Length: 204
Length: 204
DNA sequence: TCGGCATCGTGATTCGTTTCACAAGCGAAC
DNA sequence: GTTCGCTTGTGAAACGAATCACGATGCCGA
Image (tube, rainbow over the protein chains, first blue to last red):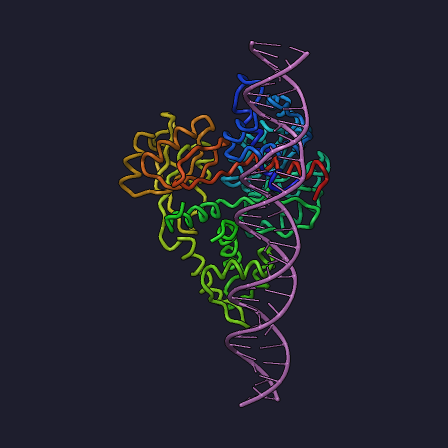
């Protein structure tokens, strides 16, 4: 499945869920409009899931949701740890959107002893020393990294060593990870800078 | 300038800044390695800024930073408002990375009367009613949207009406905006879902 | 039962981006 | 001054993704 397609699947899922239960069937045109995509593109994307549309009618909304969730691996519930309990880390710990899509935050970790034991959204901040064992014990495979940039790489190494297979990195620092590790970079300042570019030149 | 290039410029800037002051000159190869990009790609990207490299030597690091900042419009300091002072909103208000790259958070706004007047990082949360006037008065052109999904579109409309030209939207809801408005969508759950896909199938 | 309409699925095409490959240019050394 | 090694800048080729265009197919009403 093309990378570009994979990155659109969550969007489709979001759109379908936002539609409410009124419509039981959606056309590619309709979905394309709400998702801001070309309808042929939608059809091609969905065709990778296997063809479950009905010509002349469209796609069954609920069935399509299920297909998308299955394709995205959201049938299983993933356990996630958050490392770095600063402003962003604790905000993410409290964020309800993760649970809603099948992710379960099982632990918060920070290197700062002053933060240890503090409660954040029902979890107590734990020491980095507990990280490896917890990960192995609870079979945690995803981590959210919200440490300062300087610490990000060493924490990532630690996580990978402990068996983490996917990392969502909010630290403004590019991680070097082995090929078999999934890593996505979300940089808030970068996003603003891109907006700045287009705005500065009056383009778009 | 190609969209793909624009989205890499902040990365280059970040890499160059992270290199520290030791090296005064960088080759495309070197920058490519730290940025995780092909070196020809780096050269082509940088060539859009005008050709400031020296054959046989490389690029002057500081000069290149300046070029990048200029191209990204980071010479001027942008004023930004944050709308929606929930967990994420207040975390972003406290985030230092924005200031560092030339963005200045000038106001926080929330629809919840209970939050009004509360101090967050030196700012007092203001009412949505103040939004329009503040934006016009201080010539604010960028907004960060961290409201619940349900409110996002109407707030966006309000912002655009008030003269905002760029929106960074963290609400899990796709905004419909006119062509002349820049809008970027950052969805935390989406990012995890993409990771989930690759991990579920053992790909990558 | 049949015809017409709506929509899907998909080959062909276009478009944008990445990568390759190499000539041109610069600096250093002798 | 000439040669040599390194690195840029860029046309050409390769690649991947978006779009177009249309045949295939299923529903519904007459």
